[in-house]
Amino acid sequence: MGRWEPNARGRLAEAALELYSERGFEQTTVAEIAGRAGLTERTYFRHYADKREVLFGGIELQDLLVGAAAGAPESLTPIGVLAVGLDAVSEMFEGRRAYARKRQAVITANAELRERELIKLASLSAALAGTLRRRGVPEPAASLTAEAGIAVFKVGFERWLEDSEERGMAPVMRELLDELKAVAGGGPGS
Amino acid sequence: MGRWEPNARGRLAEAALELYSERGFEQTTVAEIAGRAGLTERTYFRHYADKREVLFGGIELQDLLVGAAAGAPESLTPIGVLAVGLDAVSEMFEGRRAYARKRQAVITANAELRERELIKLASLSAALAGTLRRRGVPEPAASLTAEAGIAVFKVGFERWLEDSEERGMAPVMRELLDELKAVAGGGPGS
Image (cartoon, rainbow over all chains, first blue to last red; front, side, top):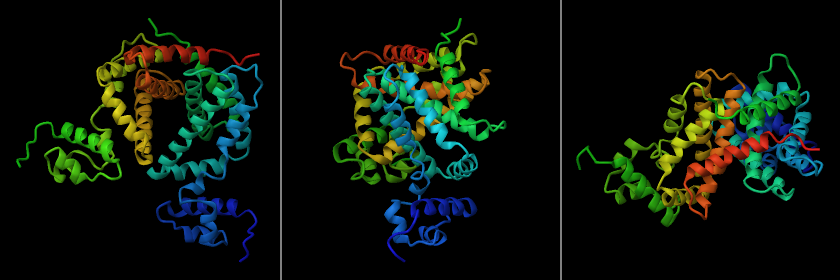
């Protein structure tokens, strides 16, 4: 087999998700994933460091969210920047709900995968906070907006996966940004 | 050695933190922790499942936050309930900044410990969302408030650790709740 394998990365990710869904994450080996994709283990490890990473490397969520936030109009407030980032992410997930549901079921079933997901989200939050600071947002507003943004994304993503009306992700995220506004601005009560 | 060891749990946690600070997390064994505490490995494993857990089991953050939230006056809004929970947590950390700084330095230096911390925070968020639902807060407000609360706690905790004025944790948390309100209510910009 030659060194040039067209879309090896994508084929490995697809094979891994299939096998993890069929047999479970723990019962699947890298050799089996590579075999299903028609590639070698060596090729697998050129693309992914371990068995977990293959589920997180395909969708470049961080680049997309942070890139959109960095390029948003200067006049936007931090929450406006966040909305632009979430719009970009929502667009990427367009038409990928079935895939996302399958992937999430695999992650939810395994503690190691849930850990890796939490680390990815923490890293996303840190990158987003850095982008906001570079846009001139002071601390703690930058970190807090980033963390609140990840909160909206987490809750919104779950709702989008479960949504019986099969709405797009963008309206779900916008609804949650409004909800955050309502919750945070609600005062302490009487 | 008898089976009754006064405050074994606390002594093990203290010994572990000392050793992790001195030698690093990876270079320390359970036998060494038990030895420093004047206890046996067997006793260690009666109290903690592994080397990581000893850093997270001493402070019952989740019980405290969720307990305070559950017992908060019925008239409070979700964010008001959150404020009550954060006050209770702040009170617990009173006079423990030096300990918390030492512990955080150990956690920050090790990827496995950062993972465990993220899992604890995710579990805290889930428990808090459950408490809010039992108080009649509907979804997605319950999950979003809980996630936003964890966001405030994370950012506030870091600020409190680094605070040069050595303020108590409660005013730092209140400042961040106000900041969340300002950020979330800020509108998208022009």
